[in-house]
Length: 243
Image (tube, rainbow, N blue to C red):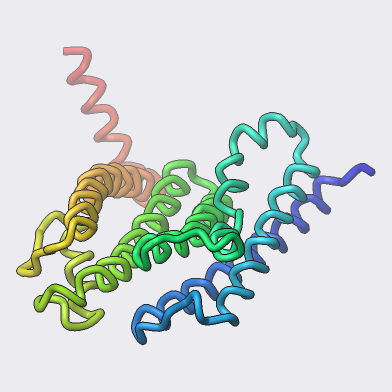
């Protein structure tokens, strides 16, 4: 069965929308459970929802693989999507594998990583400029990492750290750490300290890309709206090189 380019685009768009909506549902579930201290393993509605979300993610992967013109290339580029779509939490529960509550809490974020990648790809497809596409995709991933890190930080630090009385403090810490400014909240758990290093490294990687994007945007704006200024600057740069 041959799928036209238009049909392939329509199916891919529908699948991306479904994946993003389901990922949003997972974020809402995890956020509510974290804020209220709910034991998600005892929350049967969440476990069922996550299982079917993972099933849809797996179906999406194989449908995309079936429609791909070059299936080998698609698999090599997206194999991580398949690994992130496996319902690990449900498998661990089925076989009664024993993990600590914090370890299981991390497992919950695996399907969300799949949703974050899908969102970054969709944002990239919606942008024609390659640099803008890269910047917006990266920005989406950074925002989601900051949010997930704040939830993890709250879950780990709140029981043992008086400086983290609520989620607002955890989110403030994550944002300030990602900007490399720092805050007056200091992690006391190993996981909190690791998150601090990861967010700081992420911030140092983000700002150079942000600078390149702004510079490129200003150059394109001047070229479109102020061609005389742009051409004079271009001529000056060439004359400097010649001299």
